[in-house]
Length: 620
Image (cartoon, helix red, strand yellow):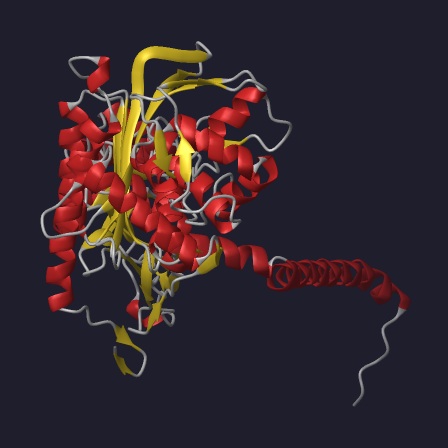
């Protein structure tokens, strides 16, 4: 039997109930819609931001440092290399993660985290934990607890607390942090540059900056080849700070830099450094420079200068490599340039007689005055150089003329960098414009022209090897991480003078040693040639030449019939009993003789055991 239809009274009674049900349904639908919208926003719009926050909290991007290539000498001795070390740093995100910090602090105090939560609020929990960390770190670091506490509270994402921590110390610290429940303080791998050579060759090697990039010296010159490519790895930690190995991503291994081998053999370099040090101190000179090169290839065999950089002095701004900088007036050793121009262009012949006068001479046209140390009278062109006659050289230069003098000065490499590539190299200078009367008389004898010791060695190297100017060669080879070797070949620049002129000049230079001003440079059983130089010292501050102060030098080659080396010795303002004793032939020539003897002995021993260089596909 069907139920009767509701009457009007019943409908009126049920209407409020229906409205309440509809209202409840609307509220539920609105609530579910809001939740659905919020979930959509979180999952779609804010997903990248939240993922990044989670990654910052639990994921760490570990940079695997690449080793900077080593710098080695010719025989493979390490002069500079990278060493694996660790650095200690803070992680701001973890140090401020209250929940995790509370668990660590509870473990430290031996209570439960819930009990600790009732005792300390969030700020108090962080402060108490930071105090604990600061106390532990103050026991192993040089900073005070207060200093460490301020670093822990810093807003910086991370602060490096200790650098260049060795492996053993890093292991001890890691165990300590584990025992003392230290969270938010981590160790990571890095590298530190080491210089086993210390002060040896320091002005050539240079240094690196805080990012392990070259600042100057070979470190800067070869920076692109020495620098490697860092690797990377992503790791994930749990809320306690422990790594989760199962979430470790694939490792991208670092690519280490290539090794650079210098042309310098440290056994010879040490000998030259010792000679340079003795000469500098014995003569109480402002500076001393010795450079030894191989003329056939332009190879630098040794290069020493004093004063030199002290590796313990962090301020390197005041140190200068005087082998390539500190240009000076070379004096009589520059006279070969004048003679090369005259002989090449047939302005004179080697046997032609030149009137060098009676010590003093005044040009009647240009009104310039010159003098020699002794009356020389009539001399051959060779005799002019052998006895270092300023008067005779000036008369020869008058035949050469300004344009030709400038041309040959440029040909010999003066007034431009040598191309060695080291930071701080000076180009030197000479007057290329309108000459005064003094320039006509002074430049041919080595004044009013500024050169570096390396430039002079390259110039004399051209005379030694038949007239070819070579680019200085400091890097012998590059060895890549896979063992492949790239040998750096010699680089000729251009032909300076004819081979005949170069041969004549070598004969003249031998005469300087056998019968002229360079007799103290002679060696028994070895034919030596060279030239003395004594220059009045110019003071740039007072803008005048200072009486009684000189730059003395000697540059030469040996053996003269087939030169294996060119050597320059220069001393700035050496002291002696009298100014008459301060001469290149007296002070610099004996030092040259000692260096040449050491170098020839070293080369003879080295040639008995030729260097084996591994190259791709075999050994040469």
